[in-house]
Amino acid sequence: MSLPKQILEVYRDRGWMIATAESCTGGMVGAAITDVAGSSTVYERGFVTYTNAAKEQMLGVSPNTLAAHGAVSEEVAREMAEGALSHSAAQVAVAITGIAGPGGSEHKPEGRVCFGLAVKGAETRVETVEFGAQGRAKVRTAARDHALQLLLSTIQ
View (cartoon, helix red, strand yellow):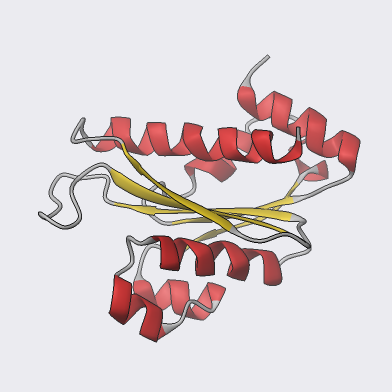
């Protein structure tokens, strides 16, 4: 069974809904979930917030956090996940922000992706994964799959 189908099954059984807040993946997590028939019972909404202004306006990410840490940071991933949760009826929200490439810098290399996972009534978790400079498409796919795995592991 595919990862999105597993997610739908366990979230449906729990009666929980999901929200996504995506930057570098541009909606790939939401698309993977909604590719499965019946996903409307589990997928509440998605936010594609590619620019800093969109992160601020749609998710309530603080301009101060963006200025202090940059968009690709665990601090911004946390605020994105918490914003998606508070701007939805979901019980779980996953956020992704990263540098898919090409490019990057010495301090924020290509392939660095930060994730946030907010669950109602629990402390928000954040993590950074270094996928490496394997090309834009592979980084985005790896980030999507990692986010889906986070969603599944949260509820199992």
